[in-house]
Image (cartoon, rainbow, N blue to C red; front, side, top):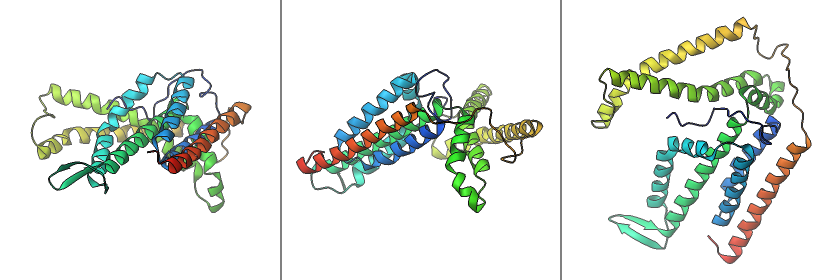
Length: 272
């Protein structure tokens, strides 16, 4: 659980770190949306190469990102199994009782697993290369049009950023509580599902208390610094687009064009 990468910031001086946070947020959203338009494995190879180049340019250690996938490993496997056994298809590969494993099910499982992995890595790169303050400003800028209908864009952006930032903090707190309970003789590994669920109660109660204490401390700290939301708020660093930001967007648009081209080629030649 301590290997969760979403919400953490990795300080470095790289091209990705220097990009405008608004452009990084836009590129991340575009990448996440368009990986669901990929219909063949050639497109996934192109997206994987693009993602690998982004990771290399960001100077974030690849092992750090791969360790972050352990937290969602069960979700990836569970999703793949569902697609394998519940996807209708004509080409039967294996039959287990009333369940049929088809070629189409295996392909769908592989596509879904790749999508989830790319989604997590792409989202992690955003938070690893963007400070919480920059991410708050970017989200607030994206929600700026909603201010005309009196939607509290700044408060929403602040809540989303704080929630992302406290994911690794709460995971670390939970690990400390678990070790403390195990030192007192608690057992979290043996027994059936009901027993394991009951054993989580000694973890959840102190975790909730700790979360409320941290929230109160954060609120007092913000109030002592005269935080009043968006009213009269100024920024020490102004966000400004540069040539590198448009270059990053252009590379992503080339990837999107390549994805659609590969989808067309795969449809013509019948490539998976």
